[in-house]
Amino acid sequence: MPTPTEIKLHQESRILDVTFDDGQSFSMSCEYLRVHSPSADVKGHGPGQEVLQVNKEDVNITQIEPVGQYAVRLHFDDGHHTGLYSWDYLYELGSNYAEFWQRYLERLEAAGYQRREGAAGGRQ
Figure 1: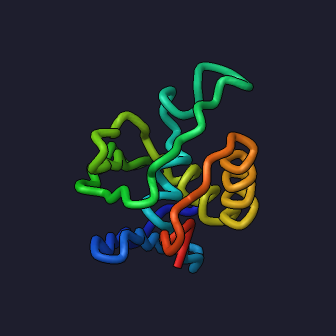
Figure 2 (figure 1 turned 180 degrees about the vertical axis):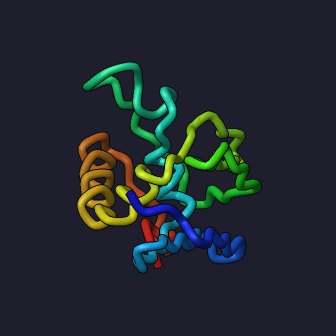
Figure 3 (figure 1 turned 90 degrees about the horizontal axis):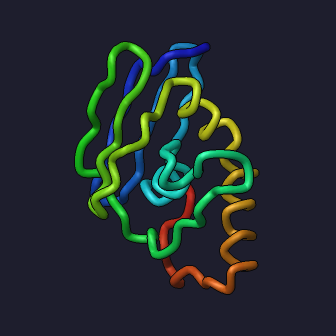
């Protein structure tokens, strides 16, 4: 599995750029990363227990903490910091952005939640 060669946060635009050693590069918004956190708070403790994240349009990353040679812990300004983003998971999020973002938007709509106009969305 590819490993990151660069992880760069653009705080003003709330975009995280991740470049991997296979040449792939992904730009993902802080909102996208927050609502797809691998933590139990978001994923639940089993299939079908996912917790829909709302009101995350303006969330930002305040700290990127390396965890060994395999992951980072992203600290968000809403206090969330329990998910470990492994290299595999970051690559999966980047590679499947369109599908995952669309699925998230559909879940919001089904729940009756409407994102604010002008919010950055999944990726720039």
